[in-house]
Length: 496
Image (cartoon, rainbow, N blue to C red; front, top):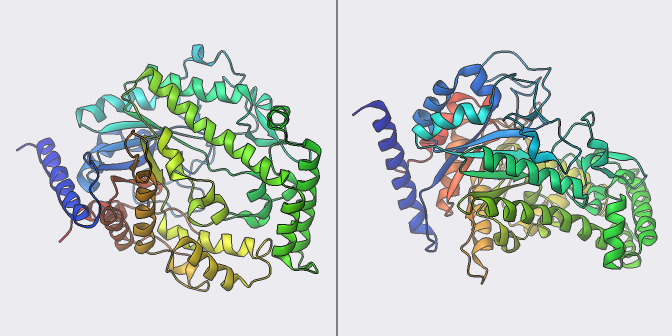
């Protein structure tokens, strides 16, 4: 038996073991072979070589799916380790502080005629097209390849000013507006470029953003510093959409202006006469345009999912199209309410639901500390966390221990099961979307916060499959993963 045959046999054994374990605990669903995916950027292939990286993936973690970061201007999925975080035990032992980002495949400019955002070719690895270079070698190993692209941009890109959102205060934001036709043209162009130019197996798009109401409240991890006067979007395209819906623009602006004032007063510790929650609720009753604008924004984002799906499928119906669902889905009940799995099923072949348990502890604590100073200011942070556990159906550590302990594998199992039930409880004839939980492998945390250990990865992988997952995606990026934790993912596929 040669080495290639051995690795394929090993993967088959692991998959069989996983299938047996999950079949015992979950309702019967039509199951393809499990996806064992990993997110990886161009930098890793340039630094370590394509063959060595793919060999390691198959040998250590039984990887059969590559989610290649083809487009991003952010450090979360592209580039080497985030500067300041410990370098992993592979790859170049130096930070890429000059990272720029962009399109790491070849940009075929003919597709971008209807958008001002055309100059997107990444300068980070001149002459290296990650898809053209990796695809043939992945195909020879029977590994599927997905384009993994996200909604993260730089402010200094040529033509981007025509696509940017406008804040409540009238400034240009660093984010792009979903109701802007040029933004929709850009996402269509990039998708078409990938689907027509390369024999890929699928695409996965991510947008870690939320609407103006949630942002004003600081309803996310890291939300405590959000400026409530800089919420979006109030551009001409959003105003036009609002008019078509019968939303009074001035009342929406007035409502968000008063909301911003209430948030600032809350954070300053100035308790309203009737308390925090009553005051926020009263404002929503007086200005229903606040939530109407929140829905307008969310409809733009979810409409983008649907348009990418429909367009990609119109080119190649067999292409797998799915989404990265932001981690805030695990913390904020307001954001969770806007992520309806039954609706996603209408335009999704798969969902990579983020279930990063290790960094999830510090992130949940950050969310709690933020909203306990705004809408939930009547309660202590510990009481807010207790309420969140009841709302989200978790049984996890107390607030003092949470950043250090992280979230458990039980969280992964509960969230996996919830996602499966969500996409399965729908009466339409199309099949349920596959659920591929995103598994935390060395996602950076702060000082004295939870760090990933091999047992964490093994238990998270096992929990996902025990709940009935159709696969897993090791996240965020290979260039920040330690090899022992990568191997632990492979070990997690084995049940005693």
